[in-house]
Length: 73
Image 1 (tube, rainbow, N blue to C red):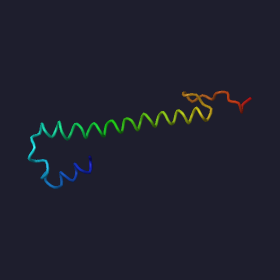
Image 2 (cartoon, rainbow, N blue to C red):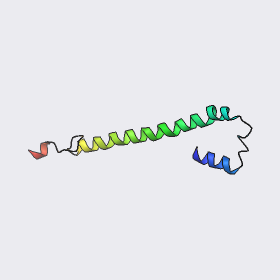
Image 3 (tube, rainbow, N blue to C red):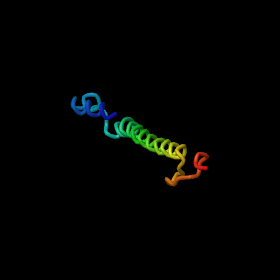
Image 4 (cartoon, rainbow, N blue to C red):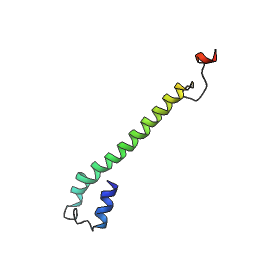
């Protein structure tokens, strides 16, 4: 999306200039913006879940406190 927008701006908007702004907004800007926003949000959420899972596997609870494991006995 970002590369396409930069390419379009450098070409003088020759592929999209003929469209009214409202068509561009509803058919191009909003769908592509949603794609970027939700992809970034999902990457963040899944990354947090992975890090929490790794912390639990390392013997910590979600708050970062050490918990008793079988090796500590």
